[in-house]
Length: 190
Image (cartoon, rainbow, N blue to C red; front, top):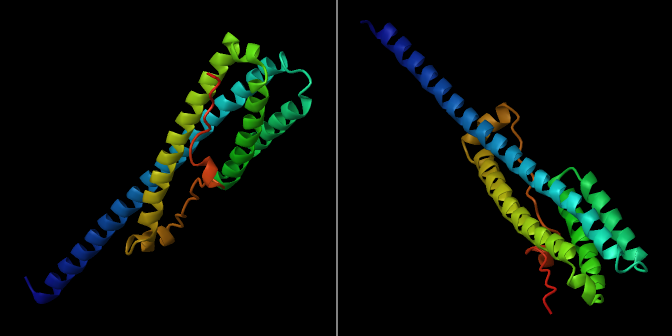
């Protein structure tokens, strides 16, 4: 074997290794992107469940508190705005407003002991609490996946592959205020 063919084999080997490395990194970034999309769709599904639950909750409270029309309108408007949100930032801001209006709705319910004892209202309240906890877990999972993806995109030399294939960072689901860091606590047991 002469020196020229040895160099040729070495160059070929380097190209093969480089191709394999690019393939592995690219596939890793794509998998992380798919996981982030899946996590976001999971949040979206839970939010849809909450959107479906809110009208039932409002109608139940309306039956007892008919003169609280302004509260019902604010909850309905906040629900509608939250349903229209597209990005994690928009969704977080809309969730902040929605949580505030739901607190107002529950404050109204505090004034009606017979409502607090209503089986339908209690079941809806429990469902909402469970959904809020599940949404909070899903947000944490989404942010963990986004953290992994964004880290992989930023570190050298993986950032070269990400830039080459135009793989972009994702936005974290950041809550606009620290008061929203925990799901709203709803307690009518008093």
